Length: 155
Image 1 (cartoon, rainbow, N blue to C red):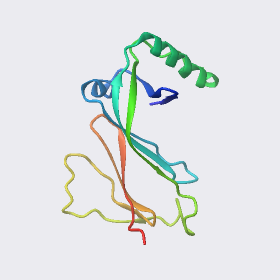
Image 2 (cartoon, rainbow, N blue to C red; image 1 turned 90 degrees about the vertical axis):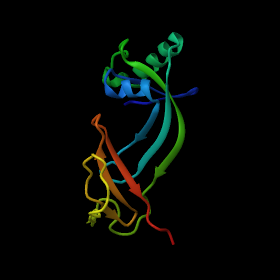
Image 3 (spheres, helix red, strand yellow; image 1 turned 180 degrees about the vertical axis):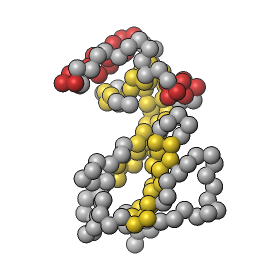
Image 4 (cartoon, rainbow, N blue to C red; image 1 turned 120 degrees about the vertical axis):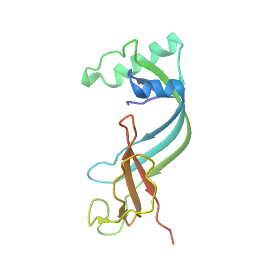
């Protein structure tokens, strides 16, 4: 997904497929960025998605989409790429600058998942324990990869 930030909100053209079908059926949406190789900064938000049917809004945002990506030669979104607006409900920005020696990507320690922890039908990774939090990743039935973070107790 390539979100569009516009003065009137957060939007995205969603290609045909399971995610588009899910958003029409149930507008709940979670957006998460994965960290870059040189740091572990991350962004996460929960949203409520709504299909946008207005042709003028679609045209303006399609032009914005192409203009912002002009160096890549991205075509105008197809008619079956549905436009959604996202009403942001919660956001979390994790910044990792200023961590102690051995910060992001260095000295990783692996934890173990409790044998009693329920998995509810999804395969999850082992718990990755870091000084700045513990992480577990899993994929949903649509093939989306998710990351869960538990923050450490702050002193």
